[in-house]
Image (tube, rainbow, N blue to C red; front, side, top):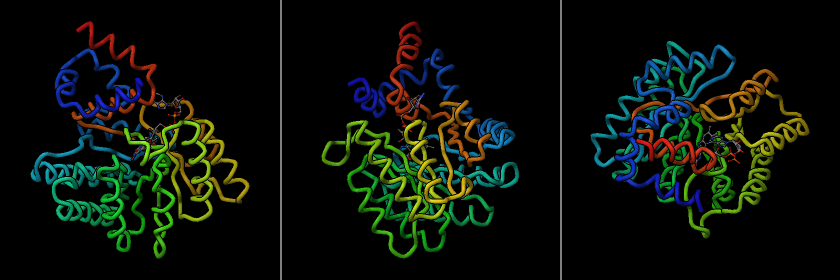
Length: 303
Ligand code: FDA
């Protein structure tokens, strides 16, 4: 119930305006967001790199209302790629296609994505495509699919909770996708997604083994000990080296675990968001961890 309310709140522009202006939410934002500027994000990236941890930078911002905003987001990503190429060459960038305009004009959006893939290829920086709500999920996957032949290193997020996921994965017959397997962070209806957490974990179990057996260099985006142990055990059983897949986690979530996995010889990449449009991202993090909610409410109410 709390989770559903928070996910609904993530889409509320009115709440966004009220809460974004509230200075008392700052400490909570700082836990999950590396800063508002590219310089701050690169500094956070280098701190993680010094611990043997890779990064994927995410410029915060979702659904744009006109195409000039999607062009501006694309230009900001080009700057981000260039900064990473010189200051943290092992990093990737993560993009949301709603931010590149998929809801306004899918052809323009695909053009923006292609530009980022081309700039990334030249700079040696891989692009990862986030998977959003099912209202844009299928278009996101098709944009990824159409650009994959020219850019086979590009990664796409795949949501274990979505019922269509096994068919989506089976539909890649020529070039196998590089995926980031996640549970799924959006509010979906029961016909489209599994909602029971235990069932989502069981699906994650099945899909992670399938990905290790069938896909190149899979990434597992999770902080769940059960899912992590499942991946580790399956890789060991299948004789897959620790360096041939990676764990991915979110900035500010389970930091000791991130460092422990890196110390144990696993590849670890942290998804590091930056920018001023943190509201929907933060609300989804609250929905994953309602225990943070009291802290958040106290800060909002006492303002
Ligand atoms: P689960 O939610 O069960 O959490 C396991 C444990 O981790 C919790 O018990 C808690 O200890 C800790 N934890 C989890 N979330 C926390 C939080 N917010 N604050 C504090 N502790 C927390 N989703 C999507 O739909 N599209 C996408 O593109 C992506 N991309 C993505 C990239 C990366 C790198 C990650 C790690 C995750 C995503 N996600 C995503 C989000 C994903 O779908 C999912 O919502 C979260 O990862 C939470 O699920 P867990 O697997 O961590 O398990």
